Length: 310
Image (cartoon, rainbow, N blue to C red; front, side):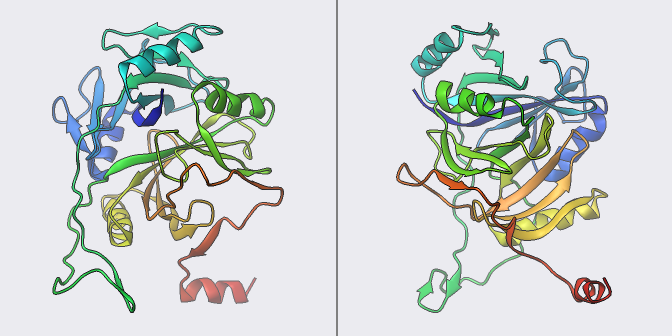
């Protein structure tokens, strides 16, 4: 019985129309209408069929919030088979209540209070053919000049990062590793635990970050085809009036290239590319001292000049 991926993220927001515009600008495809924020909410999809669902903050179907303001209320995890869904649900019933909706999705909460759903995964196939990269000794693109990427459409929602309190953090992690089978990859003592869903090969599908010592959404990361789309996707968002939260760089843990945008639904969204892929032979790696946050970040001449005057 295997959790494969994030199937859906659900936000509770007071500003439904603004949030719907944000995800339309972000490049997700509207579902069930035009995505303009009509009741009871708005839904958007990645190229591989994962869903971002927006609901009014007071919607009674939502789990209670763990923080004030607009925020992530629930992550629905996609499992491989109906039998896996039944077994995982039966195990969770041992110590918590579960509600199963008319679509067969089981709903409960984790140790921090975030909503947790379980559903049979229904992946779709997105675009898979992209030009390769070239370097001396490793040529992957012949007679094929690169074209502008055009409108960036995220391939998939690759990971979620949640902030949690320091008190009880071991119990919070154990819920995912012990009950849902998540596999720790890197454990950073002063930051949190990076873990992957057992059916996923990304370095991490979930980060539980205790460094802020409070509960809340940190960010959701969306994979795009490569660094060009990381740059162009964020450029497009800035041109549409949204605000950059973290400039272009490459993370140390996970190795992915990133660029972050502030999200009106709470937290941030990340354009991500080229993350480490791992299997069961990897880790977990333990770090008492925190590794550098990035391998590199984009620096301008102005940054260097300002550093000289500090």
